[in-house]
Structure formats: C-alpha cells, structure tokens
Amino acid sequence: MTLTRRSFTTLAVASFAMPAFAATEPRWFNAGDDLATSGRDVVAYFSLGNEDGVMGSDAHSTEHKGTIFHFANAENLATFKADPDKYAPRFGGYCAFAMSKGYFAPGDPDAWTVHEGALYLNASKAIRARWALRRASHIASGDTNWMTHFPGER
Image (cartoon, rainbow, N blue to C red; front, top):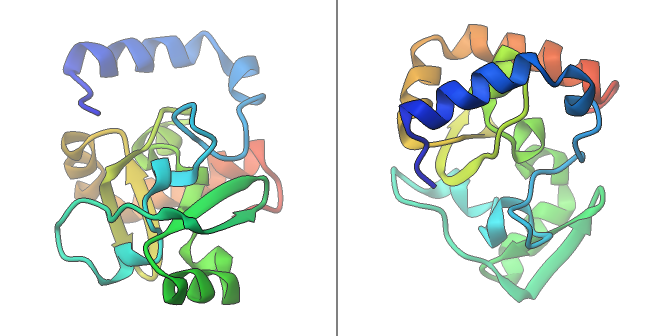
C-alpha cells in the first residue's frame, strides 16, 4: 500500500475530527481479510533483512486475541504459540507513526521494523522512514495513545 502525501494529510486532518470513532477501532488491523498482517508470517520478520514480509498459509495458522495469524511453516507457528505477545505486531498492526500521533491508520505488512525485539508496522515505507527518525519518542507516544484505547494491552 502506498500512502501519498495527500492521503497522509487527509488521514491526519480526519483524525482530529474522529476521536470518538478511534476509540471503537478493532483490536487488530486487518485489510478486510480477517488476517493479521494480511497473512504474513510475523515470526519470519525477526529473521529477515530488508525484504518484504513472508506469506504464511492457512495450513499453519492460529487464532490469537480475536484474529487469525498465518505462518510459513510449522516451526514458526510453534514459535509464535510459545510466546505470541513477543511476535504479534505492536499497536495491533496499525501504523506505528499514526499511533504516535494519536490516531489509527492501516499498517502495511511490507513497511515493517523489528526494534528492540518488537515488530512495528507503518502505513508505507516512506512513513516508516519518518517514524525511524525519532523512533524512541514515537514508540513512547504510541504506547501512551494505545493504552488510551486498549488499557492493559501491549
């Protein structure tokens, strides 16, 4: 998914008009397919370089906190089941930059970062680059905003 400057601006402006709507967002972002990270294997991200995410399969899947996760193989599925909160994307797979600004935006499973043992998605690779410039402060702000909507959730 490519997020243009115009689309990002529209999302940013719209976010100020929808604080009540934001509170009703589902716990996990999915692109209408009911799959976390659009079916990408979240465990695989932890061993990738800069490549796009690896597609999982229905043959290796599990449900976690109300959404379905797919994996490329049985080993990654077992790894996830042993510690799902370690591998599930932070902020429910929503855009980490948007969450740092206080609103929900779709996370692109190909605009990912593993930082300090946690998986983050952003709306696009361009947004990921902006987020990375002040990663620590964006993560701290995102954590605060996430807790506003989902108290007690990571």
